[in-house]
Image 1 (cartoon, rainbow, N blue to C red):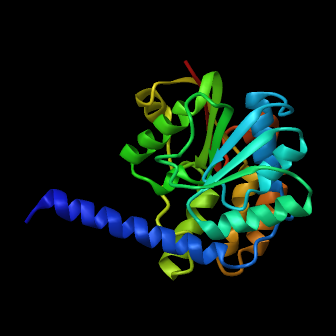
Image 2 (image 1 turned 90 degrees about the horizontal axis):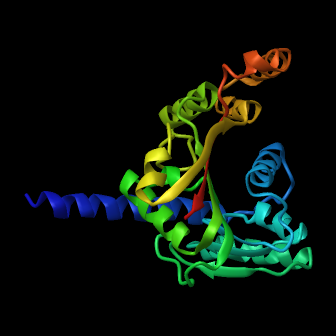
Amino acid sequence: MDVKRNSETIGRDHEEGQKHIWEKLWSKGVSYRWDPLSELVMNALLETTGPFDGKRIIEAGSGTGKISLRLAIEGAEVTLVDYAQQALEQSKLAFRLKNRNAEFIQSDIRSMPLGDKAYDVCWSAGVLEHFSNEEKVNILLEMARITKPGGHIVVLVPYSGCLPYRMGKAFAEQAGSWPYGVEMPVESLKGSFSKAGIQLAEEREIGFLESLDFIDFIPDGGSVKAWLRDWYSSLEIEEKRLFPGYLLLTHGKVV
């Protein structure tokens, strides 16, 4: 058996299957209602990159483009890149309704048709966990290529140490109700950033309360979710640090 060819075939099959899942999701109606998770990501970007006004910011794997729309409202010049035409069409409509401009590019984020050193900030949320470690590095290399020296790279992925997220995901996968395909939570992206030549600035976990939404995958989990929310809110700040959040945020700078 040609092991390399077989591996490549499996990889292509996985990739096509993943694309089909996302195209199916984007073909449905998309909500642009602002929610706590979007607020969490927006605030994390603000904390890591500073004010958005006047900056060129690109989202790699933009999905709904909900947060990029808010970045545009805050004065950023935004570019959205996604391979799914359905996702970009949803985003274009949302931008038109808010009378905001953006550049929309249909492309694989591993090879974006963009010039070098063009952006102040390149960010991605909920994307790299669907790729192998090798592909993560390839994506980060591409993100770094299109970012100015001294510019920011910000990546958010599900964190492997977040228990409510892992519980809800495991239950949904066993029940056949997990809607997001192959998703591999991440312990750290420090090694991937290093291999891509990106200077690490920080890595931390955020969003424990947001992780509780994954308990909704478990039948009758609503009461447990409500109790956990109240219990966590009653803890002191030092105690809350014992319970990592849903998202791993890795922030670096291009040198």
